[in-house]
Length: 332
Image (cartoon, rainbow, N blue to C red; front, top):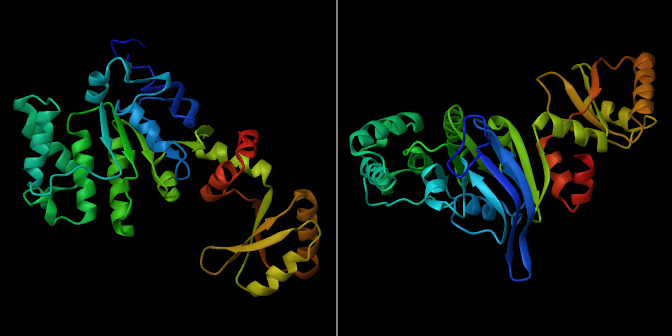
């Protein structure tokens, strides 16, 4: 990597001991991470954790107090124009001129972003196709639904063919159908670009991201692929998942499980139609397994499967952020 830009195998983003302070308050406490070309990374954290601050530093909108950051091989402080040229940014509040037609707005952005005049129409056609704007490209932005406005925001962020796309809460305020549509667009973009996606909607991360970075109180507390984070949290919060066929009553099954030796708590979870699925909380997994097998041998409740419970992304998020930063660090 150099000040002249990335080679093909260099990280797209490098954050090295970045601190952001506002007087005595530190929004970032010396964070470090890298993002490789072609990755879609979910950037998670509670409100005020430092997500938006990090994104503003990476887009050269805000200067770090200490440390360095590079995007596409260029230092965000020393070469802000180069960084902006190689970065597409969708802030939480989409910057749109509502009186303009979608086509005219994208043409304006292409000009501002330095797209060559002879290629502007080609780029407009490409981003309109990629973001699904064909039906509204000649309509005024003020007439569009929020879902289509988000699509326009995504289109403007990629019209200049940036190497890195940074998206801050891209599905906030959308209905479930619109959320799915925007996720599909992000997945399509991620086939060609490096993407950082900040979101509070944890299902989005499971649906589109290769990797998860969790920030809490200005510190990176987790950085790994989702499967590895699931395994780490499963070690710190052991549990079992057991399913039964439709023959037995759910309340009867739950009462049976609660009374087993080694079982601390039981929660019924969604399962496929005609099955009963329960999560068993336990500090003694082996004892809970043995007592369940004995109960099943004695009474045949129709048990179909028993496995170690994999934590949901919501549970992972809670472990690393809910007043448990040290616990999260131990898990990682």
